[in-house]
Image 1 (cartoon, helix red, strand yellow):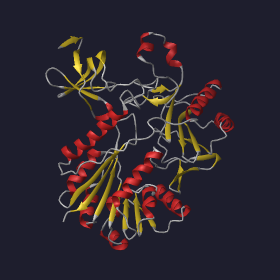
Image 2 (cartoon, one colour):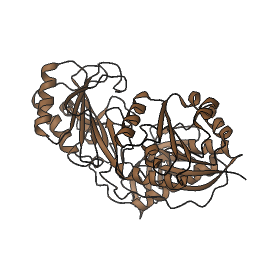
Image 3 (cartoon, one colour):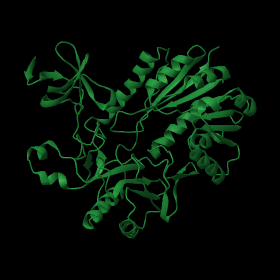
Image 4 (spheres, helix red, strand yellow):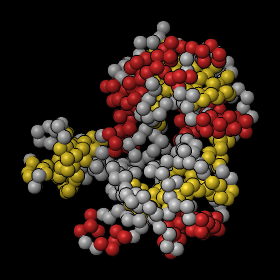
Length: 472
């Protein structure tokens, strides 16, 4: 039953039914409305206080647990529930995989409305913690307080600076992180030491509302080769304090192979339009995969789970079924990692990407790896991938496409159909937009293989690889 508490409703003894989108779970109110609840596990029985009411659903939070799901486990992270980065850390890993697989199936079936083969088993990650190779943290002069701290009315608590993650949906709120379980050491030690040194030396932390303060963001990248990149983003151009901090980092952590900084006083903290300065070491780190080496600079895109990226690329290559005689197009090639990974089993690989810096990296990596059968081109996919491009480079035998979360532009899909390659391998980080694109290709192509890949344990995110073959 439901009862009123001021303008909010409390639903009692609600059974959590399913894991929903964006990492929240799903229950139903007595009158049938959906309730979205964070930090609960399917099978939990809870009392729910609603926070927001929409036309067809509620958003709420669990305020009392009557019984716990058999699939619930104790989160290992002290920041679970506030951080929002590992929303499924309280769920057994086999269940995480079950719900990820279910999400892919539901999207392809309900949105795509296409005939599907039996799914191949979702590929879980051997590492469920400390698997990320890139982390970004924000500085704040006023740290986020939890409910207990807020209720204490101790205003001095909020004056402590923070270095950590943005609170979900709150662009100006930073949760101070003591230990994160996403990136291997020395990541935590680097972050905590930088904060401690900055506080001890009275360096100012960023205030997002007032746009003031010296220290803005910290990025740490690691590689399977053992190389480490650290980049500090300063809001103010304070040479004395900048060099004081950078020298400290260099001396404290000599294992850092790339130490860089940027002075960014614009409204947002994106790096792609910024001039990045090398302070010590090299301006890139090297990642290795099957003997291939890929340079990663501060602006590079690279799959953030190196071990699973290798597994993802092996599945992609397997689906492509290359014999050594094929012309392969790699659309949305990024820094050319997939293109180079499949190149030794192809006659020729043509990579296309909209970001000029990424293509420059791809060409440099191909040169480093002594790969001579890969060509890379810059341009907006919907403009570059056209009849003239096909005529110049030859009709592809296999197309690999790995678009961003929004999926492929309809003009790209139309060109895929016009090209009529015998095989298309579609790699996606968003099975909903993938399903939409598959529906557009259903008249000509049949989905013959599907395999989800878990790149991000403890979260709801999942990659999916699909093989399409021309219908006969």
